[in-house]
Length: 316
DNA sequence: TACCAGGTGGAGT
DNA sequence: ACTCCACATGGT
Image 1 (cartoon, helix red, strand yellow):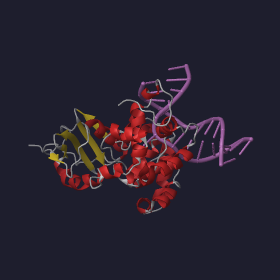
Image 2 (cartoon, chains in turn red, yellow, green; image 1 turned 120 degrees about the vertical axis):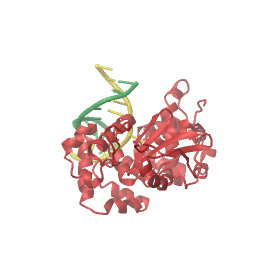
Image 3 (cartoon, rainbow, N blue to C red; image 1 turned 30 degrees about the vertical axis):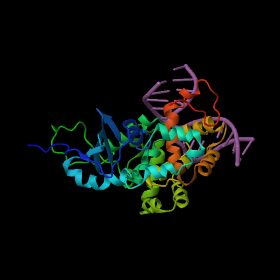
Image 4 (cartoon, rainbow, N blue to C red; image 1 turned 180 degrees about the vertical axis):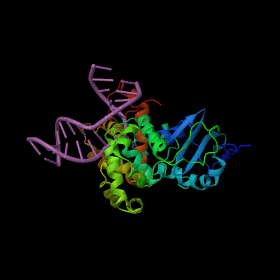
């Protein structure tokens, strides 16, 4: 008979027990672009991995296709950053003196940063400029489907696979794809940035890997050399793809958050970034993720009524 | 129909 | 240094 697509569910360890909405925010809130939920089960991919997660009584369960299970078991702890003490990291944020931050922490208990593959994170956020998350996910899915290697040596045309799974194309592969084919993946003007960045990276073997391991300021300076990578994208890549918690990406939502909740109306992104790093400290990027999640979920509703003073409290 | 979306780079002051 | 603007495309 054919091998089952998925192996049996296994408990994730160390434990990771977010409430389902927080798991959703973690996997699908704008850090990563390759997770989908159906019937309470999250299916996600990174590098050569394919994993499902579901909430169970004592924590999360996970499973993979049998052929990929061993590799996934080794890779999952790093991807989900299970070895980090997120409760302690979150507690180190200045929530005691910042009522709005305290409100954000309470609204998304257990939110964490993923540790995604560096190159894939770069690709995702090169797609992100002035696009909604659902649209970024669509671009990334098309890039994988059309230009990435199949994940499994697929057994049968009639297999029970709901869809075929593909890796994202590596940067060396992206360099060989004509810009017109990238545009066909709904990338729009981002296609030329991805193409030019791929050519840049392909001309410098080892450059991307070295960049990942440099200290934050040097790594950011190198990422800024890439066409299409500015302050915000560089910080997202370092925060979500290199574990640099001091990176403080300022996107339109964080700009809104700091304007509405901290009174920084009219401030430029660079000024807001400076404020964020000094106010939130060495793990400013973690604080940023809470602010981002809260503003997207509750921000507009909280505007009805009160003026946006510092840390005006909307009811939870 | 407007306006917005996890922005960036370039041109003109 | 700052301000405006083009860049593609779909969602609301």
